[in-house]
Amino acid sequence: MPQGPFNLSPDLKRLRDDGYFVQIRGSFLVMRDVPYVTAQREVRLGMLVSALELAGDIACKPKNHIVFFDGDFPCDTAGKPLPISHSSKDFNLGHGLTAKHDFSSKPGDGYTDYYHKMATYAGILSGPAAVLKPGISPRTFRVPEEDDEDNVFNYIETASDRVGIGALTERLAGEKLAIIGLGGTGSYVLDLVAKTPVREIHLFDNDEFLQHNAFRAPGAPSIDQLREAPKKVEYFKQLYSRMHRGIVAHDVLLTGENLGLLDSITFAFLSMDAGEAKKHVVQKLESLGVGFIDMGMGLELVDGSLGGILRVTASTPEKRDHVYQGRISFTGGGPEDVYSSNIQVADLNALNAVLAVIKWKKLRGFYRDLEHEHHSTYTTDGNMLLNSDPE
View (cartoon, rainbow, N blue to C red):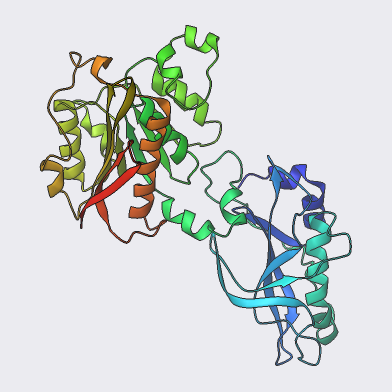
């Protein structure tokens, strides 16, 4: 983790300068080696954990007064539990952090900063320990190892931990994704997965980002950017690298000759035209034992309004047979199949992408999956969502 918050936030810096062993893990502020007394009147060391509110890499005023504690319940010198509001259970906070209790002790006006909050809790817990074992203190002046948590973001992701789903989000870490085709749907897939802790996101497309693309993609390019007619992969890499460090651009059309570019991929999203190229990609992913999701939509202009179906088809090593039973088309496509028959609009592109990313997260155990469907369709008329092809 970058040292920015400790350098730029006076309260965090003061904690370290005063000898507290504090680190950042995910979006938690962690204080280790906090002495406390057990019910057996033994002095042990525990760990305090607080959610950390940040503006970029600068700590804000704490929004709540709660901390987590990993250790036995702290007691006074007689071994009686400290009179502090609490709940006790096993907390999995993610980032390798667990806790047994959470504590609630709020000053009248709340905590002014994180030094005030963490030093106060450390004092409450360590006071009895210092009586039983004179000289012991949470101010150990122990120099922490470099905060080198392998972070894929340019700034700390605070959304998951603040709502208690950090451990779930970690199930997506380490993934090396491919997004093949950065048209309307593929670009929205990128927008969603760039906000997850996947290790790498490989973009495959050899087209330019032109004016019509601007109206089917997330974000709002300037007219100067459009005049440059950048390659799609470079445009989106520049945009999303502001957040995610693992964006890799491949300005290529995948064919039978360059499929080796997929060798390190662990999952793929396909947003490409039907045809031989798609068939080669699918066969390559299957040979690698890699799961993928193919997305598509078919819209028609009838009687002055649009209607049609969005499709999300998943293929995993455990289930592939349905792919060749009409769920994915490998015929047609190519230069001759121009946009005259390929109506797309941004809201449906976005919905198609959302459904695909939700299915990927189901496959990774982030979302509950009761049906284990591998094919789903959404019909615009009637808002009908149908699942089929379970494992």
